[in-house]
Length: 460
Image (tube, rainbow, N blue to C red):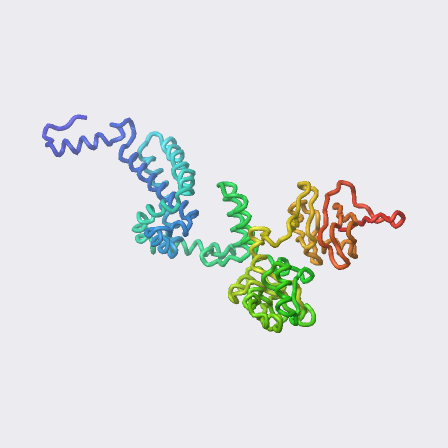
């Protein structure tokens, strides 16, 4: 480049800068445009990082420190606006980078655009998504303050109109707006269970803790009638029983609370607390003259259809440990305690008064042979043997399934074939089945033979 001799220092400096930045001086590439394309791509990455973090961040984690707590409250009102700002920044940054690259390499436009695409895919797609998934809360603490001025400048010009147009399209498509949508309780429970399952697969969440969480979520679907001790298994005391006799009965049974009935079990008048009788144990006259009905407390009644969560609320509100379950006719269906609710979460709880060796389910051969109590629920049996017992509204327990299949009460020691399961009655009386052994059979179910008298039956 030849310069006139009349050029002064300022003119020489200006000409030198123009020479260095011109495409001819840099092999056909504009340095300023190339740098501008890089800056635009960085801004696009910032927008992509913010948009990804807004999708996966946890408000609970964000609110753990003071700075995050304030940001959490702020995002609660403007999260959707920042989603728009972040995506506008990402799109605008990529477009600007492409335009600058186009001008930076005037002789190879296609190559310049291809370079922008190759850089934009990881910079605005995979990398921000993966990074935000791991550190979403930290990302927002850094990026939201940077985007706040841009949101204020573009709010009325681009952000709100874009949000309005998006919501209008969603209404046309009959898609509810996520901001105003109220999730159903069942949907929330399903989301929680899915999150727990995903966490168990991706992290080291122990199986026992995962089952506890799942059981807590499922409590809403359980009814009091499903977890209650049946009336036939209840230990109740007559209201006319003297206190000294009641103390002996309580010592033998090992419970601390007993329903108190007047003439028959459906006429429950209260609940007897063993500790109330112990308070009078040093008064022989009171023990000999007072009855259980004199010291019993007012009972709590709940319908059989109440779910376990509402049952727990009532027990807490009334400060009770025991509730009597009523059937649809007003009769006593059974009783339920706080321990029954807790066992729905953590499994069977045995204390020093529980008989040894009498687990509700005893596995004899994994996946094939089990011994169960008659009042064990059908779904619990199916967890061990597969879905061998069909669901039906006419029964809830394995004993009820046998009754419904045979239309009679089997005797102790009897062996029957019900569907694909061989059922051996271990303990029973003329009213109920206490324990039974279930074994999967590969042979087809057999009909009872009147000629041989073989005690086998087929049921569905």
